[in-house]
Image (cartoon, helix red, strand yellow):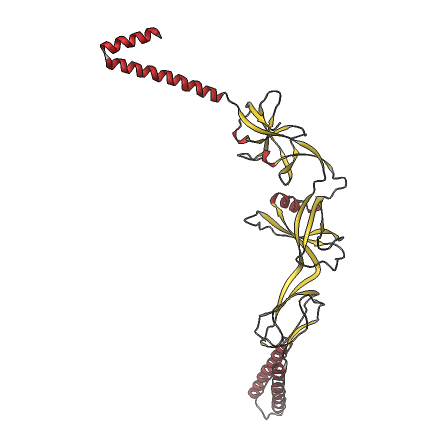
Length: 367
């Protein structure tokens, strides 16, 4: 280094331009060496990850979900003819049986129409009978008989139509139901198809839940592999067994869930009403289904660029990590069951696995 400085001093005295170039090159080499040393030092610094221990727990593989009580069907009933609502026999909350009267229009105009159509029919029938008798005697022509026959047929259709409109002036319950809502009051003028009341079919009560896709796939493929029960906060002491009724295969685009309806088995508690909240529990149906399962944090599951989920294992002896393919079970809050691939008590990377490479040495926190 002393010789180099001496040479630079001589160059400065005899040739300043060359000296400045040599000095700049020397400075760059020193800076480059420092940068390389810093990079090597950075490369030697291991990645820091968070680890958690896979736990082996007793579990019955059950999930709890929120549901809602629904009737078997809901129908808004309406008149098919117009008129004045003269009789409304039910209120909201009334239980009705099939055939019970619910509402009726003022029948006077409809009865008069029936009387008028009946009179026209009687006249047409009389004319036809007279024409038939005269034709048989050869006094009247066949053409007149055919005319009277056509007039009789028209009168019969008009009478049937008037009787049908009179029947449509009343509404009866099409099935056993509870009246959920009344839309009009007595003496209101009613137009066709305007809803009068909303009926809920309670001959069968159902519980609707929204299943996440991983549960929906299992419920769809093996509906008999699960036992589904429900309790109701508003009806203490009443628990019901449920069985699958309908499965909507069109997923909710936002929540990515599937609507599933279960029917309540057995006698239904009369306190139970549509719209009430249900706590639904889904468990394995097999006897002795309780077993020991491996549970890990959901954040430990690596699903990037692989057809199957995997997890990163940390070896305390070597300080290195390795990836392992696993098979997942049901999630529960921020944890998930691992059905295959882990035996329990392994250290898994629960944070920072996206920066790892196979067999890489890492620094850990969380132990």
